[in-house]
Image (cartoon, helix red, strand yellow):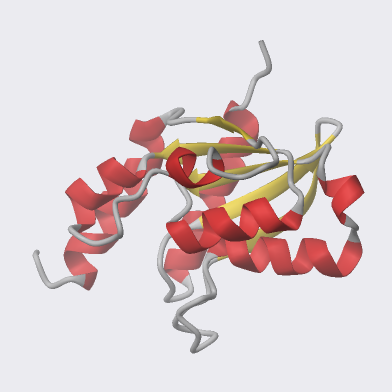
Length: 156
């Protein structure tokens, strides 16, 4: 059994960093052969672009450096289950596996936002199979959201 926790904890640390910079708390890492090769944070506010989700930022970086054949053997680790937009991008990127910490359902309970579409529902519809694993260490990832969203949404 592969140990996903170190990579998920790095993604969670990136989500904290993103929050500290003034963005939403999401982070992602791309792993190949047990080694992190790319990192990305959410930058929707600082980048003034609501599509600058951590996963999409990571995929954009990956597309500039690697081809789809290379990405097939990579795993995207993310602090929170990808939204519908990011799930589609993961599919089109060629990345072969995605592992997440906090579920979209749990995020919705905390923040009261989101599309509430499980990433599996999107990724299972494609012609290419993408392995999905999660939620994992959900409490650790959810704690970051519990720190951010009540303040951001004025519920404190």
